[in-house]
Image (cartoon, rainbow over all chains, first blue to last red; front, side):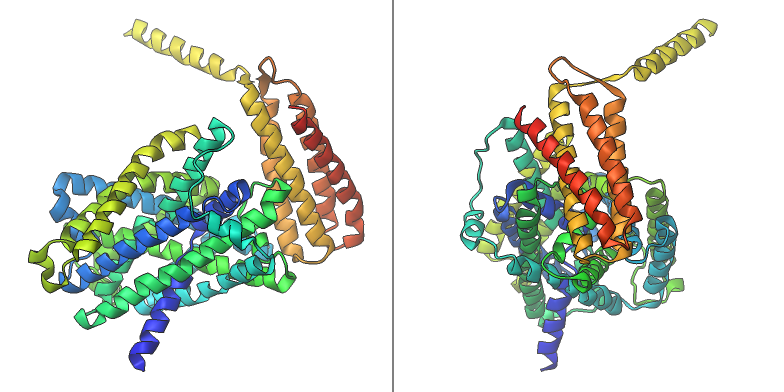
Length: 406
Length: 139
């Protein structure tokens, strides 16, 4: 019974923490432009994250190695260091975007000055992270993120065309104009990238070690990765539906966070808008914490410094200093006034470009019998992993020209 | 050394002069501007509707209108700072429509707590949206 409760809690936490600012905005925009035509990109991204998240958790349990320790051993010091710098730059940009998003939602909820809220919220988050143990950080933000379910309820209440949605599982490569085809490709890559953001697997594999998972937890690892992500992807599909039903017929391109949140409560009244805003706030806040902590995990794991949120701050000084530093730098970036959604666009494309360097070492180690023993990938796992790695690499190559065109 | 400095100064001046020139707005960019303007007008209409039905809180309406006005002003400024390429006419008209839209949203913002006062801005925003739609279909 206790085990079942643990799994349920893990799945709910994964579901609540699945969506972030990039997904909220990017998917709603995709729905507003292409209706249901990009549903397949969400399904593809979900399958890929399930496959790789499960591998990361398994490696963490069996080899006791988090992603960035693998990166150093598998890619070598130089390429590993380049990946570390790129990943942490990405974490910084994403964290700044998420903090900016937090301030926007708080401003819409309270009417208080945005910059003041930005500073206050960052300070509160840093204090919360400092005081809470890892599992409580994960649960607090993950479970409050469940308020995002109001987006799914709204989507269903608006009576989507389910047949069209199912048809969206097949890519529509032929678009009326070349520019629209490029835009379609850009959003396909963007959705795929937003669902596979590196910080999610860094945080997940570090969490498995923080929580001392053993081989007995491998079943829970699979259930959390598979069910949590699948339910999370349903929430992402709901965002696509809302874009398609609320914005597409009105020719609105939702380029503001408040616009996307408005859709989450569209068929309902004021209270639903508050719930939708709080849900989005929880998800975005959770993502800002995950990116800041990921930055610290990455540095410590790569250079083999002591790390761990559950250890006293004094015994892991570099780890503590790094995550605080991530928050401070992200706050400075956000305070410059750069729009969070511009940062999101940059992070999604940049994230895609460096993605192969994160996922390749994971696949290599998970398929290595010497390291994984009886928990090594099955042939099927490796085949699927390779197929997704090829797809990730193709998307990474396509991301640069597509990003520069938009 | 002095020659090198002069060359650097000259290049910098050239760069500054070239940057200060009006940017030419291509036909494609002008079309994107029109689509963005139509999106803003439709969004403004949607938001005012929600305000009239009390579906949004006052803080939310006020804050979101403020962000929307900021975006519209940014686009109007971009258009104002550029000159149209041949075939990309109508930008001045578009800028006027955006300025009118801003004015209506400011009025709506002043009536956040007064749904009855939103009827005027709602009707004018609808007019602007229709005009932009006509411009888009004539492209």
